[in-house]
Length: 463
Ligand code: NAD
Image (cartoon, rainbow, N blue to C red; front, side, top):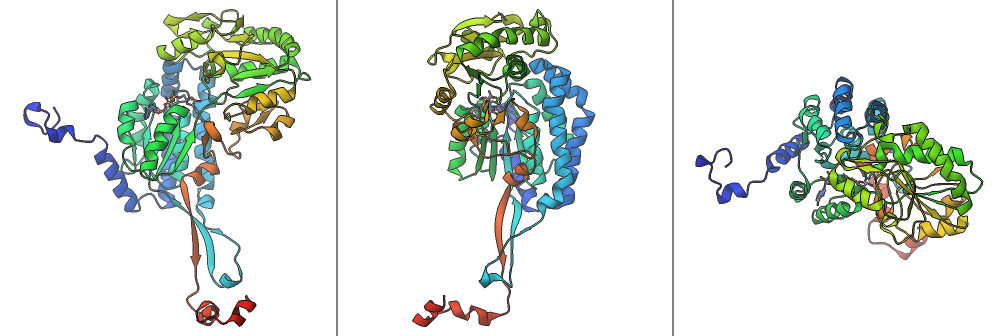
C-alpha cells in the first residue's frame, strides 16, 4: 500500500498514481518562475558539480571499480577528469556563450536590432548508459545546466554502484528545485517518457534510441540520440604494424571493449594481418601481462547477460589471440579473431567487448566499399583518402579515440549512430533554443510606406 492509503489497500486511485508527476511538476514550476535563467545561478550549479567531482573522487573511483573493474587511471581519464574539464570550460565561457549573437542585416532592417538569443528549452531529460556511467550523465548535464534548463537525470540501472552515488550524493550539490535524479529500468523509463519534456538527450543503443524517439514524437520533443554502431578501423599496408598494434589494442581493450567509439573490427590485407598478429600479441602481453585476468588494468564485463552474449561471439571465425573466459569473474581475455565471415554474428552486431575481428580486404577501394554498404558508424579510424569517400559521426586518422578528447570538436553520430552533437560549446548550443530575434525601430514609419498597399506597378519595378 502507499502512504495515505488506510490499511495499505491499493485502490484504483493509488494504482493510477504516477511516481514522476510531482517531481516533474515541481521542476516545471521552477523553470517558469525563471530560477535557472540568471548566469549566476547557472555558474553556482556548475561549481556545485565541480565540487561533487572533487570531494567524491574516491567514492566515484570505488563505484566504477565495483561496476566495471575500472582501474584508477581509466576512471580518472575517461570519467572524472573529462567531466571536470567540461565543468571548467563551461564556467570559463558561460557568459560569452550566453551573450546575444549579433547578425548581419539587410537594407530594410538597418535601423533595427537583429540577434540570436540562446534560451533554455525548459525541462530536459538526460538518459544515460552504463559503460561510462559518470561521463555520459555528467557531460550532457554540464551543457543542460549551463544553458539554463531544469534537468531530470536518468542514470543506467545496470551500473548500480555509480547509479547509487548519483542518486544519493549528487543532488546535495545542486539546487533540488531545478534538478532531480530518477531511477528505473526499461519499464520505469518507458513511463517517464510518456511525460512531456522540452528536450531529450539519450545515450544508448540504437534499439532503445528508436523507443525514445517514438515517445518524443508524441509531444514533438526534439532529441539528441548518441547511439552506437560498428566502428571500422582500416589499416593500410604502409602502416607500421607495431604502432598500429599499440593504438588499436589500447582503444579496443580500454574498459574491456565496452566503448561506443572503440574500433569494432580491423580491415586489412592478408599480408598486413600476418605482420599485425605477432605485434598485437606482444602488445597485449606488454599491456596486461601473461595472465590478463590478474591484471589490474583490464576491466570486466558489466553483467552476466553481456558476458553470455560475448562468449557466444568467441565462436566466430578462428581465435588467433586470447579466447579464454571465466564466467565467475565475468572475464573475457583480450581476443583477436581471424578468418571471420561477414555474415557471422560478430560482424552483424556491435561487439562492445574485448574482441577484435580482422576482416581481409584486398585494397583500400574494397575497404571503402565494405564500410559504405553498412550502417553509418559513430567513428572511423583510417587514412585520409577514406575520409572523403565514406561517412561517420567522427573521424580519427592514424589513431582512435583521441578526436573525442577535443572539446572544440563536436561529438555525435550520423545515420544509425545517432543525431545531434555535444561537448564544450556544442553542448551549450544543443541545450539552447536559438531564438531568431528582430527588434524593429518604432520610429521611421515613412520607410515602411513602400510595403503597404496599394502598390503601383511602378513600385514593383523599384524593388
Ligand atoms: P541501452 O540502450 O540498453 O540503455 C540506455 C538507457 O536506456 C538506460 O538508462 C536504460 O535504463 C534505458 N532503457 C533501456 N531499455 C529501455 C526501454 N525499453 N525504454 C526506455 N528506456 C530504456 O544501452 P546500454 O546497454 O546502457 O549502452 C550500450 C549502448 O550505448 C551501445 O550501443 C553503445 O554503442 C551505446 N553508447 C553510445 C555512446 C555515444 O556517445 N554515442 C556512448 C556510450 C554508449
